[in-house]
Image 1 (cartoon, protein in one colour):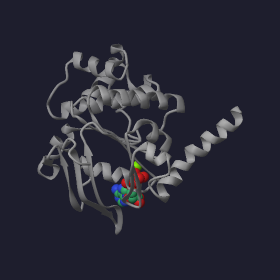
Image 2 (cartoon, protein in one colour; image 1 turned 30 degrees about the vertical axis):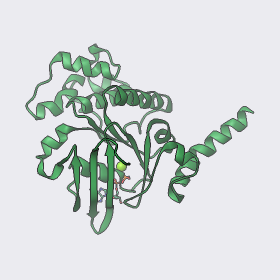
Image 3 (cartoon, helix red, strand yellow; image 1 turned 90 degrees about the vertical axis):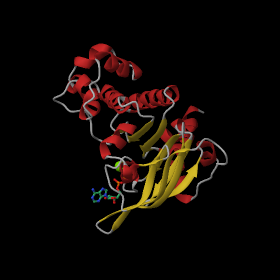
Image 4 (cartoon, protein in one colour; image 1 turned 180 degrees about the horizontal axis):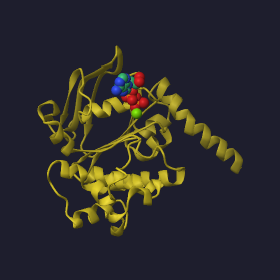
Length: 255
Ligand code: ADP
Ligand code: MG
């Protein structure tokens, strides 16, 4: 990595065991400011646990996490969550709260009210009309709901955005469009982003760096181009083979 900008997120020797099973196994990792990293792996490989250890929704057994040079162990959980935008796997919006209330919730938990203007600004970032603020989640499409989730994650003005399979439940078209939107937001707001996905095609298309997780360990750390030219080892290549085979099958039909 040489003399590039100092690492924004630094994970050292991180482990988490559940009932004797190692969900995260001595992971060490540095991510520079501005990187867009995809974390890919099979279900159960430890992706969510690793992400939750970063914002201390889960307390690791061993190891440390530093954000911008500061150890998160020393920070109150609320403070480390303020520094980190987080889009949860499978957890949508609170159904009994409006869009605006959902977006404002993390800030309210820190007794910091968001103005209507700020909420409109956050909605605009994810390309939703300001009028959406007063809607209930049940009055939105799946894609719109996920965009509100992203807006909520950005509400704390943190520069670290962690997303755990944010597009999992969406149709492929909405998924592709929202992926590109998030990538533009990443560039525009100078974020450092970690996107957890089990979809290697999504990782290759959106990220500047792809980490592959297997049984709690990072087994590959490559650029999309390197992965596509065969780097990263067996587990990584098995994941790359999925979209590759699909692309070949499609070009076969087109011919
Ligand atoms: P992924 O996000 O890659 O699907 P997870 O981090 O959710 O993987 O899970 C990794 C492993 O840890 C799995 O074997 C899972 O069953 C286990 N695990 C995750 N969360 C818990 C928990 N709260 N209690 C017990 N085991 C857990
Ligand atoms: Mg998960």
